[in-house]
Length: 113
Length: 123
Image 1 (tube, each protein chain N blue to C red):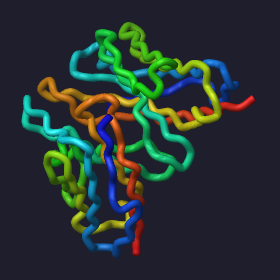
Image 2: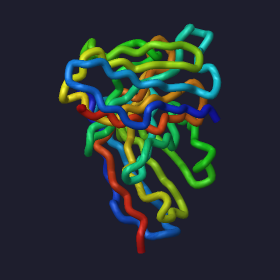
Image 3: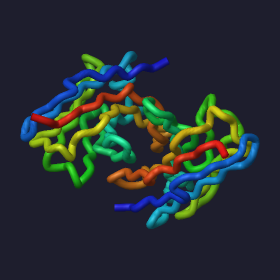
């Protein structure tokens, strides 16, 4: 199984400031056939299902604000929120779907400082 | 806007079978551009992928649950289902169905989710 580890577990950022979450996989999740990293980022608010923000590590899902961006390749990835808004308070998960079992990181709780 | 509507009991007795169904609002369950999956989340904890199924019926299960899980799809009825046998308290969780999109034949993330069903295993 590919292990996925996020850091930090929790993060407090001031409104308008940058938030950065890291995600590391235990092996490369770069799919050579299409040169894409099989990593997604999700946002989950209390009482709601997760929402896909980013796929292929850096492609923003339709309708997701452009303050959300993803980067990285191979085993190291980052989700950045460029200017934190109040509505961004949530738990964020990364997921690898390179090989089964598809595994999620443990989650990062993002709060307002 | 696609909708995934989950149905099934919220309480299951230990050793019995958990059964949930996810109804798809359009005919995408019969298309080759999607997989359909189940994910669960114990109260206050993180997400665990249970398994996925392709419209053709090919299935992929989490080895940690494989001996107890069956996922099936009925494209004519536009729904897919989860059966988890011999449940224990450790299976208490919110269960989500979700769509796994393919783009140009390659997997994308889980782009649509059901509302979630809290299933409690208790006598």
